[in-house]
Length: 273
Image (cartoon, rainbow, N blue to C red):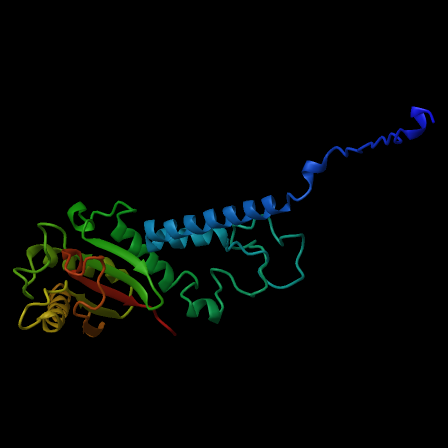
């Protein structure tokens, strides 16, 4: 028998290589990128909330929620915007609420967004106190002690202590000449509106070890002292409708014992009629 008959058959195995297989299974990368982006946006939001003031946050919110209307009334009208410009009162574009800044609806008035009356006058007061209009009524040293903000109740004028420049003498309810000057100025500035006024006082916390904590009595006495200053400076009789002492329950600074928490708040109460 020949040797060729005993030889095993030769088997040739060919392996097919498919190019581009590395692209499979990459969907997790897209999901991970979306997750990282969302986390970055979340941390940016947390940073903004901590690093900005209430007015700055309101401005940011307004930027993403524009209030330029689309039309004054629902439907009808001539042209897409019913007028020449969306920024003019007579040709205001439509938004379907049947009201404008000059012709406010009851809903807008209830939010203090109506027209040319008390709301615009309150804005004028706020501008004067900020020094935006260059009014000589507000001296630079006074503006350092004053901030304003708008709440649901009305325009809040906050007057607070600064280092070396307190509003009251020696931790008492005796006003300093600075507070007397500020009170006289506020009476003049707020005379352009007729809103009722609420007077509220806040004080800094005391150490826990004190035997008798005076914060309640002191804040109430300071609120009443501020009311008397307003009356003595010529504020219309009966305009003050509320005098409140809040003790140290609503600190303005993180440190409850910080002098910044010593403050008087005058609220121009919004007219609900």
